[in-house]
Image (cartoon, rainbow, N blue to C red; front, side, top):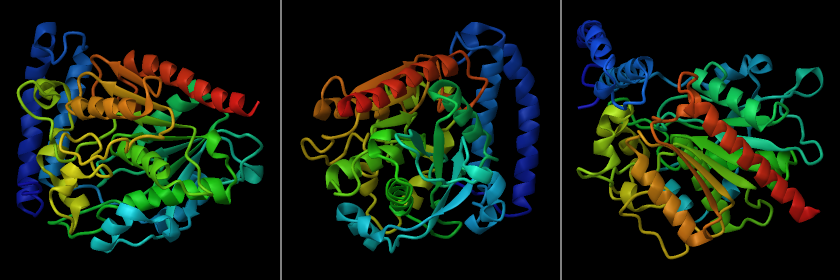
Length: 404
């Protein structure tokens, strides 16, 4: 049972035992890791082997005790000048169709959201300045399994990722990272089930286009891990509903997107099994906490059948051509990820509905989950970012050529 040791004194006892366990395991892991054949991947260094094992253990400890509570947007607003914080108005008129139906079932309302700006600032170091003529932008959704994480600069994974974006996409490009609502479920109470975060993401896109004047052809929607699922969902939502004043973005960038919360890809030959030793996010899926937090009052089968919830699920109820009309898409995965199968399934579905030129698929054979967000994952991180940087320039260049 997840979070079984959340109360004291059991929590203190469990944490003490866990620390002792790590102290015992580290020298054993080190000795074993000196032999390439005993590492999760022969190509891995000893350092990477130890880091991944430690991260897996740490995440397991977290899901046995408690998660880090989200910070209130009002708290972030107090340091807006240094953090790049801005408010984002709700967009209730854009909540339609199946998303509206699920919102009604889960009593989810459109609410004021917020986000953080990275990159060049305006006069007097102001953030959120209107778009300049033909200005390009990355609209990003961070990872965290819908239940944790933040777009705030204090999140090192976000800072490392955006440092890579600026190095390989251009130092003058602005990035807007949305701080969407986090979901939670018992034993911590219930809040913000699906589609709360999704509705925030739609509002963030409207903010960029209508409030700041960015041209959709100059926007790439991006997301890593759970944020990748949100980024794909936004592009699909815009393609499906064709809002007159809100055209789709120029492209979609998905970094290790989590797209199967029902874990329908199983069996001895599945990545969930064969990559078990080479990834660290097992606790997120084995606990089923995110799935429960997202479902709220929705039927359990929704996690497997809804294309808005799990577009990479094997049990999806997807009408023919439902993914048609998506912008050019880049999917970055690691061959060592336990969620590799849903990502390749999503790739194939996009290709089926949009043609063979619609997706750039980049798989780093021995990379683990979300490897763009950690500096130690070299050379895969730099090699992958270079390829994505070329794709970004191509996407923006093609949009300019269409106008020229």
